Image 1 (cartoon, helix red, strand yellow):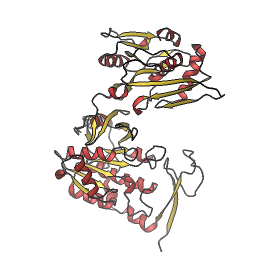
Image 2 (spheres, one colour; image 1 turned 90 degrees about the vertical axis):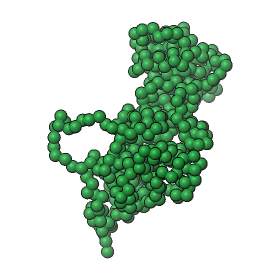
Image 3 (cartoon, one colour; image 1 turned 60 degrees about the vertical axis):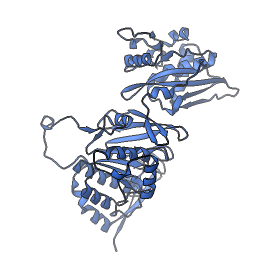
Image 4 (cartoon, helix red, strand yellow; image 1 turned 120 degrees about the horizontal axis):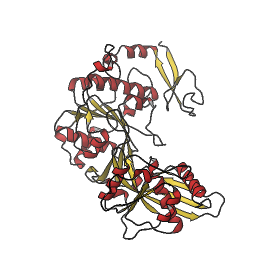
Length: 458
């Protein structure tokens, strides 16, 4: 009878233990250890599998050499033909790259990759591997989207060994695996979707991609907290991590690059969900701005920098009196802790106290603001709501606020101002050190150094 080894792996960080324990010693997460078993026979079979001879994650083994001996030629890319997806990937697909795509159920992961396969199938060999849906379901979706089904190859398979044999025979250039949670390695006795299966399956797929130059897209599920399911080691193994953002009730979707070894990280692409699939949005700033005939209190327009381009986003704030002892601080798309800090700075250095007010802040369109350049817009929107005084609709702002009340400069200040001018804005409030070297046509710019200089401008 084959011996069975029991181990426990943290689903958050991938740390393994011989015994179960309530808290992971590495990432300090509670109740995050999953049990899996590997028999001695399975382990022997696993180590002698043909797929293990493909080399390491980065390709086949090579001799030691200095960096100047390495051929550092420019990375060649294959443009997909979907503008926003090409932007997020850094210009196109790189041979041998492995890309992990995550997002909430029904947000459009499979739809976008199916559209991508249909576009690429006109010029190269592609293969769609489905582990969740039947071929009939995928064919119906392709028909509904109006895609050319004649040139698209499809297989329903969940075994990694069978998948790799098929890839070695067919030799496609681009592969989509939907999804990694349904794929399993027969050598492991644990169930598909477990930590050990996810880790080993991703490793096998990555080895194959690096050895053969096949570009592979892997769709991943998400947890109830919204993170990509499985150990974080998955994100370390793959080259690119793409994540879908947005509300399922909204027609707009945001695809963000969390990690990209072949391009800029934190690049963002915007899509609109239509009857015939996801369509790129050529002017993302238009969907994040509310079009009103008259300006309303509590609204400010931020020039946000996403990846390699500026995008205009409307920041809304509602300040209302609170009768209790603990006023609310609620944010959507903005860091809640940073809002509390900004309100404290305004109270201490500008004499504007909101300690007895409820403050609600929202970034329009479901976009998540991660940079500190939104500080100035958040405070301007809050002051506008507190005073019931609208900000002129032709005004934009950006800037970081320090704890001593100073307005700190932010990167790409001049490019932000140029984008605001192109969008028809005529007035800007920004850090003094972000003033452009030359005047920008039809744009009145107010450069300020502290929060005290902000109040007379509102």
